[in-house]
Image (cartoon, rainbow, N blue to C red):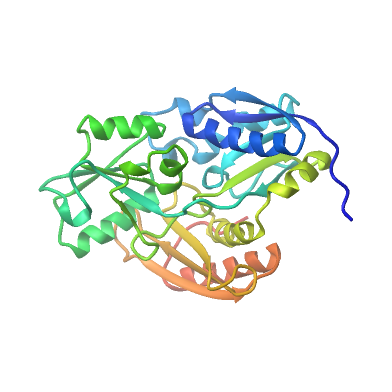
Length: 320
């Protein structure tokens, strides 16, 4: 019989956007239900402050986690809750991803007050997205429709800011993660959810990851009941693709793993797509599947997909 972890006094480091706070409060409530005393430490990160440039040009999505890691290092916080797709593939020495929770909807959402989908965009429309992955996938879809008139423009800011820019008429439509909209009760803003075949998700999209220092085994033990192994193995495979391609938000790369039947009792199918940012090389799409029961097997599947991507013409720095 397993021993229940002792009650702890915990502080969660979190960004202060409405979505980040929802995520941290969700973890807080689950830990409190286990008898732990849990407080939040709200912080503003560099990624929240720099809104006039694309993340790929100013240091990548790691800008959203660096300050939180400093709080962990200094002992001001015990754990940090992240949207997993914002977490760099390689964590600083001494840190670990100690828990991946059950995944929300991993798909992308089309949000528009007037257009039901890409095919309904008016002439010379502007579509907003913050993601190079979405840029190359949208561009491929627009090319199939013969819509060279549509412009894809950068969209920065937290979720509420992005929706405000849409409502102000700066864009005809924007593409967002469905998970964030659903978590904040904004599902009614979604006009369409893209299937993975239409818009392959980013590695880790829709999943929450909890980071802590490796020298805090008691905190890891407290988080163990929150972990969801099927989600963790799926995102581990996806992140292995990004890691193997040297990926960051400066690389137009998608990776999405889905169980082909009962989770943990069926094959895990991993699909990936790579696009050339300049549009000189056609979109590369590959997939593979395997029986996966461990993180090592998930990462091996990701490594296989990296080989297939490179064989298909995908380029990028190899992982160190």
